[in-house]
Length: 282
Image 1 (cartoon, rainbow, N blue to C red):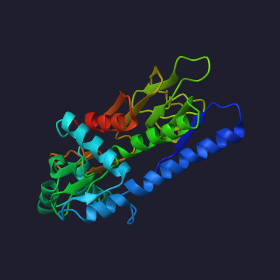
Image 2: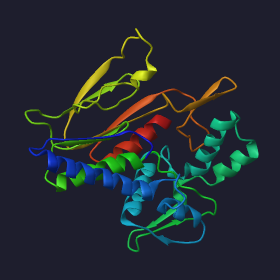
Image 3: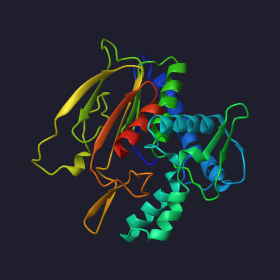
Image 4: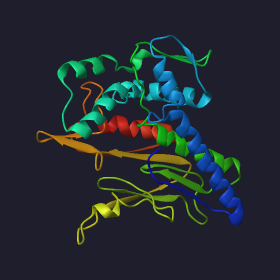
C-alpha cells in the first residue's frame, strides 16, 4: 500500500509469532491487490472500468470497505468521499507538471464526484457507479481497513496482544503484558509507530534538521481500538505561491490549502482512517 508496515506481537514462541506475522502481512497484500488504484488488475480498477454500466457483484472485502466509506461520507456531510478519484488523477498530474488543471478539465472531474452516485445493494451484494468515468479512490480508508484485518488475523491465531501500523493508521489489540494499553503518542503534526509499540515520531526523522527541537507529544493508552492521523506534511505541491495538499476537497476538486494534522480514534481501523481524512478536509 505504498507505506512501511509494522507488526508487533507478544508471544511465548518465536516460530508461532513469525508465522502469525507472515499471515498478517499476507492479508495486507491480499487487500492491496483488491483496493489499489495503481494496479491495473485490482478489483477496484475493474469496478471503476464498469462505471455507468449497472450493478457489479464484488468481493466481501470491497463491498465492506465501500459500505463503510459511504457511511463515513454520510456522517461527515460528504467531507470524506471516495469518488474523488478523477480529481486525485488530476492532482497527480499537477504534481508532475507543476500546473493546475484547466477549468474545463476540472469541471469535468467535479461532475463525477459525489458519494450519492454510489449505489450499494446489501441483499445482492452489488455496487453500482452511476456515471461513466467515475473512479473510486480508497487512499483515505484502505490502510486503516487493512490494519484492522491484519489485527483480526492475529487475534484469530490467539495473539491478541498485538499492534499493526500502516504509516499513520494504527490498530491495536489487547495491551502488552502488565500494561493497561498501548502507548500511542500524538505529536504536534503527525503520528508514527516505533518498535516497542509506542507511536511517537511526528514525522520521519530524516525530515528534521540537526538541533531542531522535537515537537510536543501527547500520550494515549489504547486497547482494542484504532487511531489514524491525516495531514499534508509530506504530500503536497506548491503552485503560484499556494500550497495544495494531497487531501482533495470534493467541493473544489483541488487539494485543500489549509495546513493541518488530524487524529481520529475509533473502534475499527477503516472508520478511524475515514474520519481522519474527513476531518482533515473540513
